[in-house]
Image 1: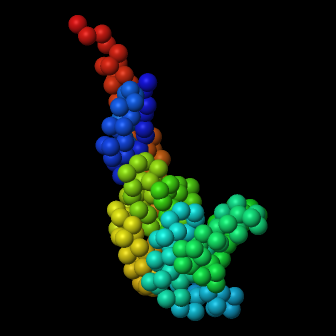
Image 2: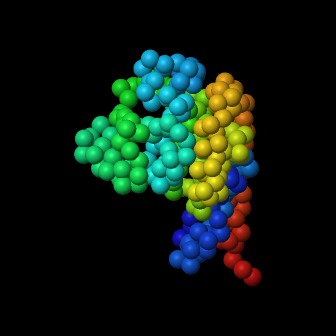
Image 3: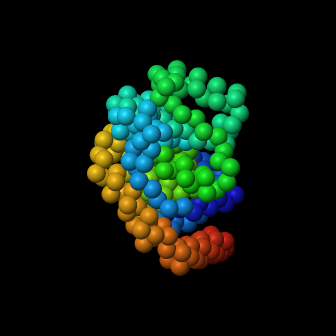
Length: 249
């Protein structure tokens, strides 16, 4: 059986995963790419009346799903930080209760958390980022679309690169967009990067202003370049198939 993975260098799984596939009798064809609503002010600069109770110490951190232990460490380290979690599933009372129980067991206080369900439309979904200073990527299954939306709306993404492709999509996006400094390689480093950025208000304001134009000018949004690289990669896979299919003399 053949299996093919498409990724850039940052998103490529480490060798242990490929070795496991080969032990199952699968043949690996490596296909690796060469390249991996208006933005608003930061929340505390625009929601003084509505959100003073959650931004009094200056910071909210937005996360979707994932590594609850890391969220707890960030909230513990950044005074006044709050966790804003948005998911379509959180429109269900049972799902909200279950998630809140998991959060409190990890040491996160209920008053530190705001839960949001599905937005009524896509424009409202994008306006959600106006309420967030930082997006913490999920782990071990990284975000993809939400990560790109976050960068486009001026909210920096922090990710932790794991051993498999599903835990490296955040690294792929940030590498292609030109922000490798926001990629952690351990859970401890992930927390350290998140805390440092949360406390650096001048840098957050600069990123709010520059993320979208930098992303638009990066390989991440260069469609012709992506197509050329994908075409070249597919042709390379075809050459691998032909070479393996040729009878040995």
